Image (cartoon, rainbow, N blue to C red; front, side):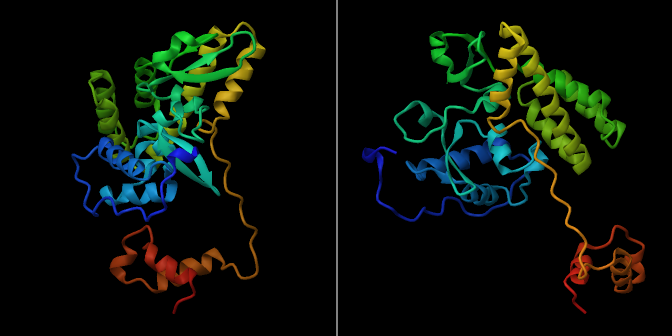
Length: 303
């Protein structure tokens, strides 16, 4: 970071009062809050943990998965326009404005290739050397300076096609009424259909949301591979470009958590269920799944 841009250290002010997110609230509300927080945190940027607090202040029930993202970082990448990771504090990303990447703001990343590819409204393009597969990123307004082939973000039609495939074929959609609603949203192709789509996916439950996320990522990777095969002059170049874009951090699925080996202190599952059931009244026994509070009490060894 350049010395001329350093400010004296001061506590970050409280930006927003906690409030309830109404049904009419949209991703723009969250995006506006995050961008405002980043501006107030300039030039150092906004810690990822702080970004989570800002989002919670306008959307107390916020869950990234409800918007087709696996975590906060991916939500920010997919849905908050105009922001980019400019550094890290340990494992915590530091967020800045995308425009900082093309100004004299120190430390701004210029390699968020996957983010550009999956964002139809991205203001950047990917420049690919067709012979070697080397990639770079530049503002859309400067695309004429690309020494290779310009690879623009996946078009809105690509996202519509991917959504249509999911709505038509996914077995994770819990009802035909919900399937019809999803199909109608895609077919309308009206402005804002994407946000209504995410809300409807959320209404389908966690399994539906997870299946949509997996389907979307898989198909976007396939579309990227096809585009690179058409752009590059050899399979080797296409593979090199694909690897760089995928490894920029937003395409690869996370590794499944390691399963802990059972130890002598681990409770037997049947005993756990028995202890929980023993604490339930007749009315509760008629309501399965088990109340999470009782499960946690048993796990904690409370009597």
